[in-house]
Length: 209
Image (cartoon, rainbow, N blue to C red; front, side, top):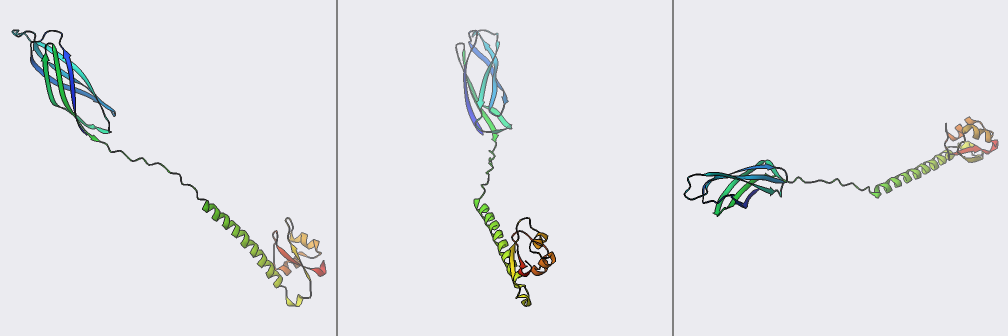
């Protein structure tokens, strides 16, 4: 940032002025993130009358401010006087100052906003299909198991009639054996099993029913 800023101010002396003998300009500043504040300090001497040998001191403090429109590195900020003129009109002193403000601008950092990812319903559908497939596969496995049990009956036992019992919730091998007047071991041997679960199909010989 490099700005040349004009400043104009009219100041008035309390007494008549015939001549400005000497004049000087200094400045002081304070700064923050939004503006620069400061004062121009004008000092010098003047004569009240043209033939007077006495000189009178004068000083004026002229405040100024500059609003910063961009973010700058305050440590790099510098101010200097580019031009200073004055004009005496009676007891009025017209001041004109051009001053320069220099500073290194700070780059704006990009702002990243977190975007929440929307869950895809497809994933839920796939999971549902997978669960359904598992149920179907489990049912197919039960059917295959039942067919295997039926086919495993020895050929010499073909003259025996069998009843297919579907296991209900809470049933055990002992309760089923008691129901059909058969031993638990016979059910295990005929069906080639050691345990049962709900909806299993068991072969029960009818001759013992």
